[in-house]
Length: 87
Image 1 (cartoon, one colour):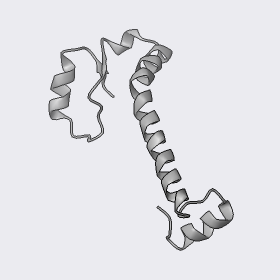
Image 2 (cartoon, one colour):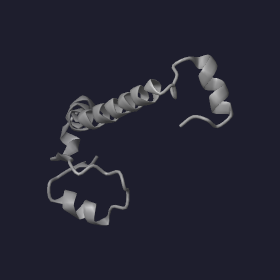
Image 3 (tube, one colour):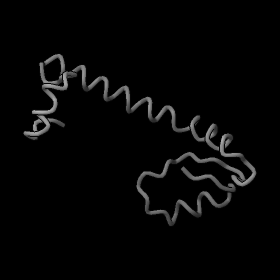
């Protein structure tokens, strides 16, 4: 996520090669914000992204579990991981 003055956002995005830069950013001079304020502003933007990823993971687990292809038992998971049978 980019935090900076408004006019620098499009300039930075043009030259950026990092594929995971979020489209939305924090506008304004971040030097005027405390670490807590910057975290709060950032979290408000990224929280839905993480929640979506978590929900997708839960849905995948439920889908695989309904076919007996998932487990939450460590005694099954460790051997499966050792033999390369997990995703």
